[in-house]
Length: 414
Image 1 (cartoon, rainbow, N blue to C red):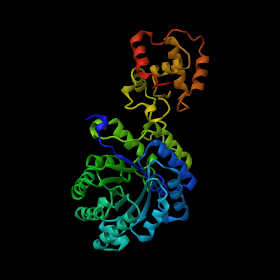
Image 2: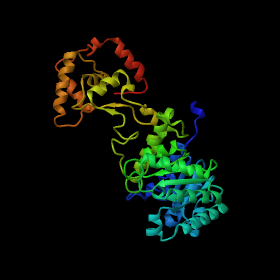
Image 3: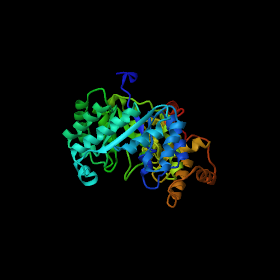
Image 4: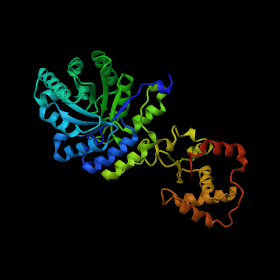
């Protein structure tokens, strides 16, 4: 199947709603508009801008995004309650493409302990809320909160009921990050059979067990055509499925997943950094796709491979996600090959014996410093008695150097 023939997975970004609910991540209406603009440049299909009934600030944030952003669908969240649905519509009614997103729990635990209603009442409330939303808005989504801990037959019954009431998207959230990929596949397959092909199934997975992205991809394999996620994976407790990880998993492994997204992947890193600036929380260095170490290499074996051909240790190019170029970090695990490459980039071509002396000095520095930056390295080079001009790895020959030039053009700068 050609790339263009693969089904498109809609990316539903809930950074401004579920992501904002994480402690310390609240956003002002101006913050939301700023990030929504970046999400539009990123090319997400849906922006869930907030929960309008929650507060006047949340209402204004959703309304401001609805007015400012015209490309993606703008969704507002609402409990299955008349006032919530009305507030959600009031907040998004000026959007070019509005959506009302209604939710109600379907697990027996939530129904009995939190809502204190019966299964019959759950269906009644869900259907009434969807009908109210459909009377206001053509695009209505229903979410079965705690779907993965719900009785599967009952969940299928609820999904069919809200679909009959007019919901165009049915979301099956793993609200507490409980499920395993096989659970997700089983659930989506069963619900998909019950509601038929006219309804878009959506996945919304939390990361309590570190499985949010894996579970989201399992949902896609089982027929989901919308994935709900957040930039940098922010959200309640351990967060949500990370948007950038889902998008690049589909991009890199489209051969296995047989689908694609409409996301502009070169905007992933800028979007990550825009969010980090707004919430004043840095991205963890080892974060997949967008972390500072995602395209950094210190181990000598890895650096040797990267010099010869970047594909040896990188499955995607940093520029493909808008990240800065690959870095060969000089530290206690580095080897002569990485040191030579870094020296060359700084304009210094050393003889083998000088490079070995420099390497010894560099290791001495790493006894008290975790890494050696360019200014430190230049200082160490100047301390050499008489740096030569012969290349350090002439014995390797032109073949390796030519291979390096061909495979790293526009990709690797040291």
